[in-house]
Image 1 (spheres, helix red, strand yellow):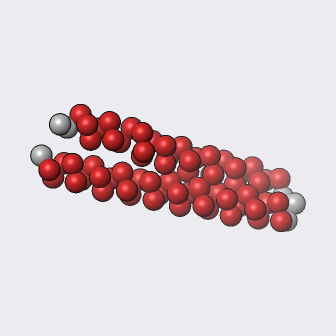
Image 2 (image 1 turned 45 degrees about the vertical axis):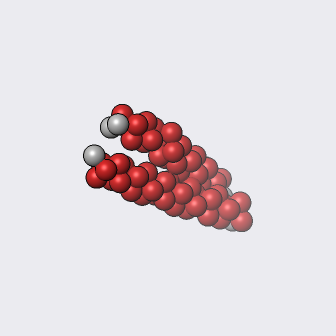
Length: 71
């Protein structure tokens, strides 16, 4: 059973890091859009930032529930 607990903890870490990466990429695109006065890049940046935040929330809220179900 500890294998599944460890595997879920690794999954939480990986998904959190992916979400943070997407959010960081979105932040860069957002700032680039403001710097170049490009509304398309700003829109894309805010979408990526929000998607990355959503992924992090899923990793921090829903995946621990999966971990608790295995007990």
